Image (cartoon, rainbow, N blue to C red; front, side):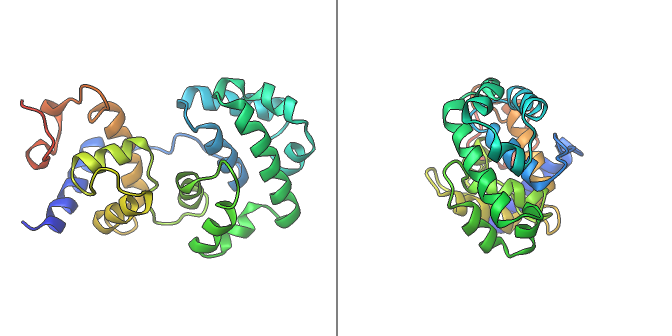
Length: 220
């Protein structure tokens, strides 16, 4: 079995082991997806979801409402997500931009190529590669694998990429091995796998479906 075949098998086994994973949040718009993903940075799903719900109730999660709200109001609404002093002004700036440039909604931008979307959104503080890819994958329905800390850890342990590889290198390596039209599902499976088995501390190697193929496995 060559390297490519091994990687393809590893991802198939992980997806099969994890089973169907539903998208954790259903966003009403691409803009909601964008704001929700920004709120999720450096915090857990529970805290980011609480912040999103509070923001929606007190301000509204749409470009007009957020662009007209004060930074202090946004900040108070998203406290549970952490880093609110950074996230609040960034969300307001992004809301103004989307309102002025895409009055019909962020979906207008998502009609463009991946490269155009990445160039446009990537010009703002607080919007990195992972945030853009989440919007592309789950609002733009692109067949890509967003890379978060769990996905990065798994890719490194399984030697898909070397330690210290760039975001793009990890995404490309995973996309080369994931089945076409199954890359979003692969992303979700890797997230679940990283949270439940291939954890940062004390990974459960004895329960791992790819332990025989993992070069980093601990002694069983």
